[in-house]
Length: 440
Image (tube, rainbow, N blue to C red):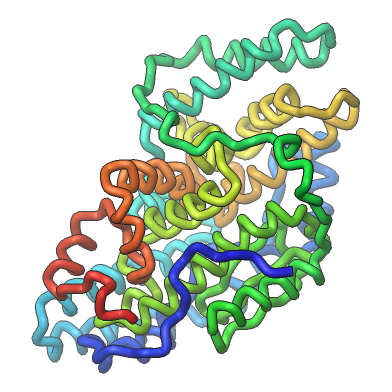
């Protein structure tokens, strides 16, 4: 099976990079991604899930085995040594600034990881806000509009369990100032029902088949040096920039249409932008300018929506969960608090007519989302969470606005890993005259 990938393919021609003397060294010491070190051991996480869902504990204890083996002292020394050398020897002001901003971000990531190992939730929260920011309140208002619309849709249910869940969500909404956000999603390509395409036969892919299709996509793009691996400890498909791996959960299954969207997301965006960035005038674009993730995930979700359509901006679940955790409504929450709200949301949003099954599925979905939201913390400190996942929704909104303003802007997405709405990034690209034209 072969999927068309809309992203620009990896290129054979390389240009002379202005950061040639620094990038190799930075790639070796700075390609780590904090969230990968927040993964746990499957058996321990499953045990915590079981006793949490049985309400034997208020909050789970998340294990972080990878952090226990991490050489923090040596890594920090290497990052600071590179920073000193660049400050002393780099004569190009733009290159120097780009690397110093990036190195400051990596040092903050390192210290956040160390704070996780030490169990210091407040430090984790401060570093997370510095690296990823905090959720936008206007977008939180837009999230609440989605909840209100769902409540109105399900308010006539004849099942008392659904009505109780609706009542609990109403109590939440009534305690929050729900002014109109002013965000308009009419620019999105509304998803068409599969019934309109009776000639399309959907096939289910298992993890091994997904792995093979990802490998086909890498070959079609001419990308070498990457591998696709199946991992039993993860819940979602992800890309490791440090190991140059695409990781597929062992039990993951999906339809052919969904697989096509994820190929555009993971291979056509995350992997291709790494390759194209390293072939540009500024190799740092391969691993990304500082705070590039808003643009990266915005573009990757945009690529998905361009193929499969959408009737809402991406990343609702993550943005809503983080907004609740940090207390955008004035009430900070811990793992259990956010779980209870998400469980009710997933429950009334279920399309399954089997109410008992819907309830169990809702608890599983809420658990998975809360693990992502509170990874890196003890789960006990209200307001402390990893804010990383706000980039999916906020980045997706930003990307659609950029494209709406001028569709030709989307052709510049393949330059490398940067954020099109970040003024620092615009300055760097402008000063170095990086337009994408130098990548053939």
